[in-house]
Length: 283
Image (tube, rainbow, N blue to C red; front, side, top):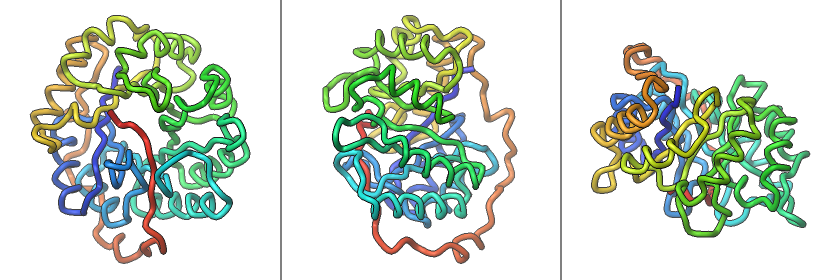
């Protein structure tokens, strides 16, 4: 099974509801909700999370970005405390998972102590965890993958291209294949970076998709004229299915169609004191 994840820009609650509904109806297995995509994705507001939860109904795939500012992935104690607060708020707003990455300022290797704190908070709320493309900013991807396995992180987003360099998942396909093989199904490898219907065949043909845990993550590749649409999401889901026959399940047939979220949550969850922020090439 190769699930499709759609990245949604959380500009305001109304826009989020429309985009997430399109992703839901188009057959997305998961969505990643990010604010300020022009800054490569920051923590979304509670209002947007509540709208996304309502629109994605009972499908268990609402992933919330946790990133308190744009720029690097090295955070101060105060920023780490804010991230912990944001995980609490995301859980209360109905998220199924959180997406984050924390690196050491000295060498850009994964910050194990900070990651353990964030993971502990997520686990208390039963949230899945994903390391975003901070993974591609680390100097040794193999060592980072091993650390994620030791930590028990559920998923990792990667394009196979070093952070800060231009290129898509097709450019990083050799590194992606290596990462998938090294993971041996112990962690879900989320393929991101220029994902779109036309490149699904060439990409998946060069990856060990059998007996591995992978998914694909798209932003503009699931849009028409800058908007996430049912048609664009369906085209991507169909392209993945065509590229890997029998390896994808149409979640529209297996998910409940009844809304699974109460509007009362919005009144129960307080807004964060500061407007959050994050930076990550979603293309």
